Structures are given as structure tokens and as C-alpha cells.
Length: 504
Image (cartoon, rainbow, N blue to C red; front, side, top):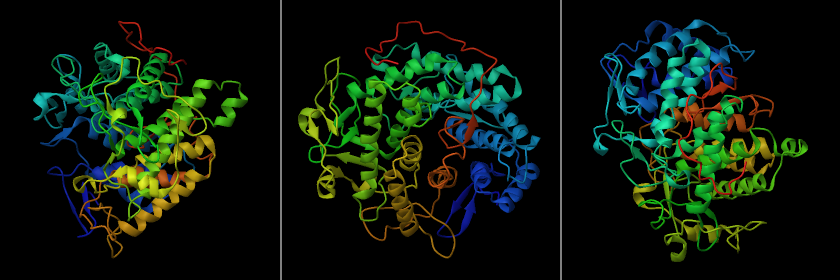
């Protein structure tokens, strides 16, 4: 209790700051609420109220603190007034702590461009540039702060949070990058990108996730984010989607040198947020059947859902092909050389129906799959990440296809069998998913509790529990309501969107 880290193998805790920041507790509050764990929730709330202080001599990562800590507090505030069985009910504790933390995080936005610094000193309320990458901030981290700050403004009536986080989107878009695909580093002094590398894994992922989620969060009243989402998704399809050599599985590759350069057949597990995001974009969180009944289904939505299904299968394959049943951190795929060559500005123009991509029928033989998945020793660890089960949850909710529950249960069993620390100490990261049993690492990320277990729990919950058409999950799986804001989007694009034929 009160420790920031948990080491499950040795059964001990450690701190990230002199007095602790409540890292595990705050990140887990809404998981306890959803599961109706009243006694640990009451103990956690008491610790939060009596012991947690952000007035510390400590610098923290702006992004991680926003999504985990601020997001956790705001989600707890929302759920405490919504779920009938939550013992704490809504009170001022969670919101008061959230405001205190957010007021300190605002210092990160005090850069010449408005792009937040990578870190902020909590006690001194000063933004700090990154010690690496020439002082640049991660593009995804800078653009994954908006849901939290917008919801806080909605709750408090204080417009500052909304406008500071919203400004980031304008600065990024003003760079007018091709096809809606953004490089992974941006400098807070200039607001300009400092690299050409494009990927949907680390440093790139959640920018795209928050495009569609910002649109959904404010109840479709900010269409600029839907435009950005459609533009980016069309760019992904044109420039990043390719297929494997043997099973012809769909993957999202990387562009180490930007558009116009060769593809790299590397795919982080982090990319597996994408099937769920695509499904949310196509359905708005409703079921496919509901959207069709409303007469709102289009050929474009059908194509998007086909891509979501294809990518979901590939992400499941990351688990299915290993000896332990657990996914590695990164997979390299066997892809034909011609698939990796630089592409023309119009992209490759892949299409097809009925399980085909680029004219190649998919092969569902596990033996064929195993030929395509290349797991390197340095990439073979598993940190208990949530992205695949997150997308399985969304895909189950919108399609009703039981295969997503079946895959999720197999993943749950693999976690139980392969990551148990023993002696009732919980579960832990592992070092090599290619062997059985996988070697245990003495570390447990808070997202195991905040995200992975939460999404697995919700995958098997009644479908009317926290319905997707009423809520939006931040990138740490913290739950916010959809709402209509008193404010309008405070910026406009200074260029014509290059969406091509992406369609609405």
C-alpha cells in the first residue's frame, strides 16, 4: 500500500519519488470500482485522502502522469457517481486531487510552441525538456493528453486545461504532413518534427487513437477530429499496410525514413490498439447490427471493419505462435521484398473481399503463421501489455462474434499459467515467451491492473455494462463519459485536408 512499484517475485514495493505518488493505487481505482472490490477501494481512498501529496521534489513524465494518474483520478470521480455498488460514492477527494495534479502538469505546456515538454517538476511546477532526442518530445505523448484535460475542463468549468491540450493538435497539424501520418518526434521550441520516421508503435501509437476518441468524447460535436482520423486511416492503408509471405496476414509496417522510403516489417504489440480503434471509428461504439439498422452502414465502413478483423487476427497470432501462448514485445514479419519497396504517392491500392488483401487468400494454418512471425531475443519479453485484449473487447462489443471471447480466454489462461509469481504474490512480466515456463522478471507495470485485467474482465461482462456508445476509454483504460461541451473547437486547419477518397 502506497508504493509506486510492485515486485511480485520478491513480494516487495518500491517508490518513484521520496513520498510516493500513488502510482499503482491511483491507476487501479476504477478497476476496483468495476469489480466491486469495496474493501481495498475504501483502504485506497483513505490512503489517497490522508497520504498522497504532489508537492514533492520530483520530476515526472508528462504523458505517463496524465494518462495514469490524472486519468485514474478522473475516472474514479466519474464511476463513484455512476456505479450503484461503489461504496465510496461521488465525493470531492478524487476531483480535488485531480485539479491539484493538473495545475502542476500545466507547466509542461509553457513552451514557445505549446507542445508540452516531456517532463514536469511537480513541486516547482516547471516543464523540463527531454534529456534525449535533442530535447524533442514524443509526438504520441504530446498528442495523448487531450481526453483527460478536456474532461477536467468540463467538470470544473475551467477552460485552461482544454485549451492548453487542444493547442497541441493545431501545432502538429500545422506541419501539414503527408497522408495524415506524423513523424514520432516534435520539438517543443519550434513545434516542428525532428525526424521523418513514422510508426504506429512506440512514440506514434496513441496520437491516432486519440483522434477518433476526441471526436467521440465530445459527442460528435468536433468534426475536425473525425476528418483527421479518416485522413490518417486512409494514409495507414495506403502506406503502412502490407501482407506476410506465407499466411498472407495483414500487418502494419513502419517507415523508418518516412513516406517515400522502404517499409520495415516490424510491428510492436503496441500497434494492436488499432483494430479496436478502427471498429470504434466505423461504428461509434454501437454494434454493427445497430448501425446497419439505422441505414448508416456504407461500403467504406465495411472495408474498415474488414481491416479491423484482419489486424485482430494478426494480433491474436502474436500469442498463438509462441510456446507460452504469450505475445512478445515486438514481432518482425517475413514479407516479400516487393512488399517493402518504396511506394508511389498514391500508395499500393490494395483491396479485395472475402478474406483477401492484394489478391492473396489468407491461410489460417498455424504452421503457415509460424513461418511469418520472427521473434528476436531482445524482443521476446512480455510486459503484460493490454493492447490485444483491448481490441478483442471492442471487437466483441461491436460485432458479437464469439471468437474474440475465445481468443481472450486463451490469452487469460496463458497469463495465469505463464506469469504467476507464486505464493499468492500476483503476476509479473516475463523475459522470453518462446520457452516454457518463461523466465519471470521481478516487475509488474501498473497497466496490468489498470488495463489488461480490466479489459479481460469487461470482455466477459454483460454487454450493457459500461456501454461503448456512452463512454470513452483513455489510453490507460480509464473511463470517461461522453459529453457535450460548452466550448467549441478553438482552432481550424490552415490547409485543405488531403484525405483523398477516404470518405466519411
